[in-house]
Image 1 (cartoon, rainbow, N blue to C red):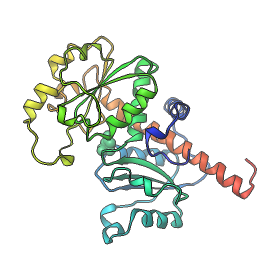
Image 2 (cartoon, rainbow, N blue to C red):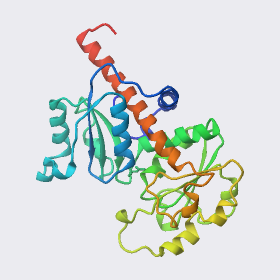
Image 3 (tube, rainbow, N blue to C red):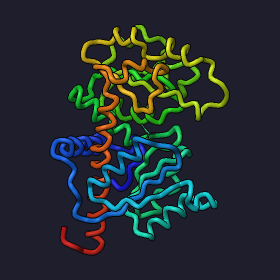
Image 4 (cartoon, protein in one colour):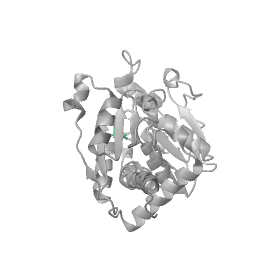
Amino acid sequence: MKNLLSMKDLTIEEITTILDRAEILKQYGIRELPVNYMVSNLFFEPSTRTKMSFEVAERKLGLETIPFEAGSSSALKGESLYDTLRTLEEIGMDVVVIRHPEERYYEDLIGKLNLAIINGGDGSGQHPTQSLLDLFTIKEAFGGFKGLNVLIAGDIAHSRVAKSNADALTMLGANVTFLCPSEWAGEFPSVCEWEGVIEESDVVMLLRVQHERHDGESRFTKEEYHQRFGLTVEREKMMKPGSIIMHPAPVNRDVEIAGSLVEGRRSRIYKQVENGVYIRAAILEVLLKGRELTWRKSLRVPM
Ligand code: CP
C-alpha cells in the first residue's frame, strides 16, 4: 500500500492488516520506529480529532512532524497542491496527511509523487482513516461485521464518513441502511422513519448536519430536526440489547443526538476518538514499512 486515499481502494486483507495492527498497538503500546521519518499534516479544512490524533500517533512513533499551516503557506499565493507537495517531497517529507475541501483532490497527484499521501478527508468524498477507526470500534464491540445491521442517520449526501463506511461495511458483509430527509440522501436509497429500523440495528451511527456544505437555509429548525431525524432519548429506549451508538464528531448535541446520550452507556463516541490514535499509528506504520521496502530494494540494501 503506497497511499491511503479511499476505502474503495482497500482490499479486505488490507483492512484486516490495519485493524489487526491497531489492536496490537492498543494492547502493547505504540513504539518508536527505527527510522526518523518526516511527516507533515496539511489541513485546508478545520479539524480537531483527525489532526491531533495524527500528531499524537506521529509523536509516539518517533516521527518528525513538520508543521504546515495552510493559512500562512504559499497556497495563499496560488501555489497548486501538486507544487506544494512536490516542494515538501524535495525538502524531505516521507508522508503527508491531507484534508482538503475539494472532492477527489488526490486524483491529479496519483503516480506523480514519491511521498505517501494519507487522505484526512476530501470534501464530501471519503474519510478513510475515520472509517478504519469506526470499523475498529465496531469490531471491538461485536468481534466482526458479517450480518450486522448498521443504521447511518443524518446528512448522508454531504458526509464523507457515510460514504467511506458504506463502502467498507458492505464489503465486510454488514447491512447498511440510511435514514435522512429525502433531499439529503444523495445517491443512496434511504428511509425517513426510525420505526421499523432502529429496533433491528446493532449500530446506530449519527452524522452531523453539515451546514457549511449546504446552499441556503435548512427547512428544519434544530428542534424540528431533532424530533424528526435525531436520536432522541425515547428512540434510544427502542434500541435492541447490546446495540451501540456511534458518531464521528464533532457532535451537535440535541440536534442529531440527545445531549444526554453522547456519554451514555451505549455510546462509543469517545471510544472512537481514543481508537483513532491506534488506527492512525497503524496506518503510518503500514505505509512507512512499504516505503522502506521499496527504498531498500532500490539501493540493494539487505531486507
Ligand atoms: N471526525 C472528524 O473527522 O473530526 P475532525 O473534523 O475534528 O477531524
